Image (cartoon, rainbow, N blue to C red; front, side):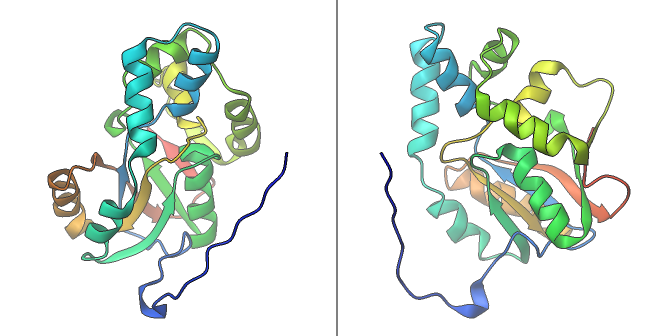
Length: 202
């Protein structure tokens, strides 16, 4: 079965944020937890706990509207949603479009409950493997990053969060206001001058 859809409306040209506008020195803020692809794969395999599935469903049902409304109050230079290409796939697009390197601290990224466990058990969706094959040539990983974590950074998300490139001075306050609005948000890295890699994960 195939289908198509379109969204028709009006947009203020002064409020457009693209995935190619990140500036050197910006901080990176990530909303929502990661892991919907691995959890839904675990569900298909019959190994997922119901509370973990419920957590993933709640995350997928949560709109990015609240995050967007808060974000627009701040000096945001670039933004992308995290969907089928996973965090690193969409981060690569931002890095390439902006001509810069995105430096990501994996310890600051939050995962959905159960996601790390299912990643360890090998509940790896086909989309994750495709993302890794396509994006890995642009990524340098630190040596201390566990395989189950690396997997999740490629995990395709359904209704994922936002990766926001914002002025460094505003990042912590933005994350705090997002949390106050009920949005999971963390400062997960920075934007710096381009080197040999589009993305560095430390």
